[in-house]
Image (tube, rainbow, N blue to C red; front, side, top):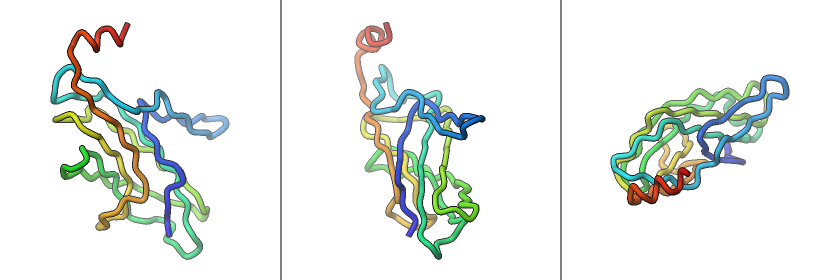
Length: 137
């Protein structure tokens, strides 16, 4: 069974060209927005997956993005274990529109299956414009 060992989102995911190590920039726990709908310029997701012997090397999977309790948007993602038992999946999203406050979930799932194998939740909070300005300084 393919499973997620790690699921995390941030402003971006970088891959070091020399060490081949992944880094999450500014882990995203919550977003404070002064107006809705809110647009997030950049969100990166990192999933580290493991498979068992006999599991497919190129499973068909999707990333689901949306507010919990609302239908998510599904984005196909190419995964290839390349004869290994673990793989990193890096997804970058730009211009992500969030229509209301709530919990924004980025999840990875098999195509056609309801249950995600891994996800990351981020709170979206509507705040007064003055509070956002004070937080930025």
